[in-house]
Amino acid sequence: MKQLFYLTADPWLPMRLFSKRLAKSVTPDMTVEVTESRGIRQLHLGTGAIQSAMRVNRPWDLELAYTRAMMGFLLFKPAPQEVLMIGLGGGSLAKFIRKHRPATHITAVEISPQVVAAARSHFELPGDDERLQVRIEDGAVYVPAHPQSADVILLDGFDAGNQVESLATTAFYAACRRALKPGGVLVVNLWGRDTSFAGYFSRLASVFEGHLAWLPVMHKTNVIVFGMRDEVYPRSWRNEELAALDRKWGLDFAAFARDLNWVQEVAPLMDG
Image (cartoon, rainbow, N blue to C red; front, top):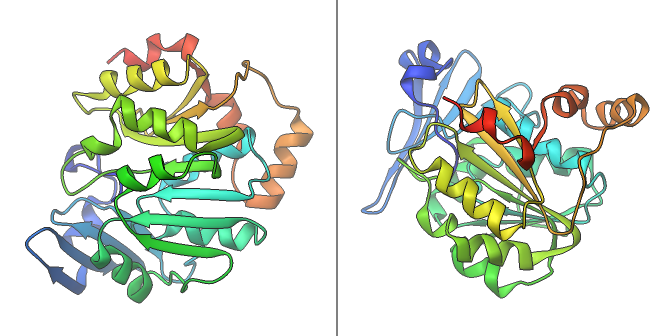
């Protein structure tokens, strides 16, 4: 279950039109398709929308901008021990964290066995071991059953057409907060043009009592929301801190810090 890029704002459109199908799996509940074009492998769930992408000659990197932005949680939690992913897709975030921080244990919860099979057969997601465990379960059931179990929760709950509603309710967001350890962070990928976006954001702000920051991606096509389990005041980061994160992870944390907004600065998010 991953985020959607729609045709009207999709920089991948020319690539998708000329892509080669590598695999397709159809069940009554879901269609999973893997395509490839110009060295980029893509995962689709029943539509032409790109759910996940991997550059074949750099399978451990983050190809999509929204996945890189989700790693902005490192500004608040630079050395997580336990990461919980709700929604696996092609496993890009799991592979990336595994490569750059071997000490982190990752649990990925994905409801579709087809998606897990595609991630392992076509996107180089490794098998389970002491650092990675993939569970084929419903995230809406798993999270409430595991309080104070994660330093970071990465929530990317989309199906073929929309955000999965059971993963976007007030009750589920509250369960996510309870599932965080002290100092933990919930990271939520939202589609900025969703007609229910304001409602999702309002639920998060309520559950996290205003301890929220957000990062726009691609002119708000995606909005990455960071919910803090404990109170965190708006802060700035020293250049040395950002440079150290850049070296460790190979991402542009100066840009993340520059573009980060806090819930008190919500007006530009809702505008347009």
